[in-house]
Image (tube, rainbow, N blue to C red; front, side, top):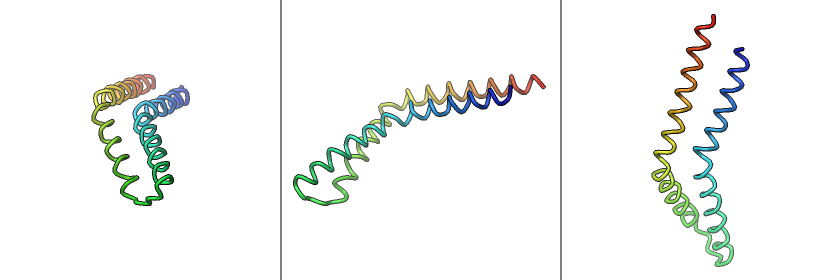
Length: 91
């Protein structure tokens, strides 16, 4: 019983990680690819040119997706606490 609950909690943790960090990571990947392409075409090799657009996009996405992230994390935490209570009540 405990192993099944642990496995389910790990699966949910991976799903929550994908939901929360997936969009910012995809955005940073796409922006990094676009900036790298521009740098290769123009032969401008400036580190801040690659870093700043990623930072701005990631910060903006985190601000936009903040309520969604809070909802997902809160739901996951409530589920974990409910399961901990159920497992503690069995013994």
